[in-house]
Length: 331
Image (tube, rainbow, N blue to C red):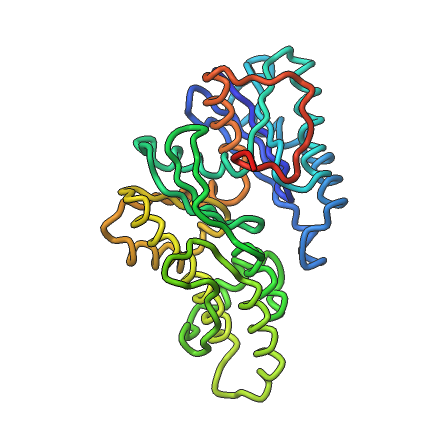
C-alpha cells in the first residue's frame, strides 16, 4: 500500500510517501516568513500552505519515484492545530482523494508524533511511556496499544515549547524559541540563575511553565544591573529549568507505570540538553528518540500512522472536518 501523508497543522507544509511501512520521501517546507513577526501568524500560514502544497506534493512524488496514480490512499492531519491551516490541508487532501478515487483517513497530530518513534525503532513494542513535548502540548502518555492510551499528566498552562518561544522573545533571541535558546545557551552556566520548577511535588505528573516565564521576565528587568551573569548564563539556566521538570516527571511516569521503555515525541525532543539529561536520569530504561527530522512537524508521521489505521480498517468518509482542539482520548 502507498499512502500520501499531508501535514499542515501549523507553519510547516509537509508531505510524505509511505509504502508498506517504509518512508519513501519526506518533504518539509518551513515558513520562514513568520520569523519577522516573532511567531506564527495563522492567516499568513494558511496562505503559504495554499501556495506550497502542490509544489511539495510534486516534489515528494518525485523523490519517491512514483506517479500520482500509484497512490492508494491519503492521510491528512485533522487536528489539533490552527483551524485555517488544517482546513487548507484537509481541503487539498479531499480534492486529491476524490480526483484519484482513493481512500482518505484523518490523522491526529499528537498520535502521529508518538508513532514517529516506530520509524526511529521498528522493534518498539507496547506498552511504553511517551513524553509528548512540543509548542502546543506537554503531556505524559501510557501507550498500551494502538488506540489504547492513558493520559498520565499534562501542563496546566504553557507547553514547554511555548515556554521556549516566550523565553526567547523576552531574551531578544528571535523565533523559533527552542533552537534560539539552545544555541544561546552553549557555553553558558545552567546553574547561574535559579529559576522555579513548577509542580514538583512528590507525586505530581503535571507541568507548569507560566511561573518560569514570569520569573525570567522579572529577572531581565534588572539584568542590565547584574554584570556577573551573562546572557548565555541566563539562557542556559532557563533551558535547564524547563528540562529539569520534563526529566523529573518522565522519571516518575516510568516508575509509576513500571515501564521498561520510554519514548520522546514532538519538536522539543530535538533539544540536545533534554536528550542528554534523560539518558543520564533513565540510564536503566530503554529510551527512544525519533530522528531530528521526525521531531518537528512532518509528513512521514502522518503517512505512516495513516497506513496503520487504513490497514486496521479505519478509512473515513469525506465528510469529516477540522478539529483544532482534537484530543487523543475522549474527554
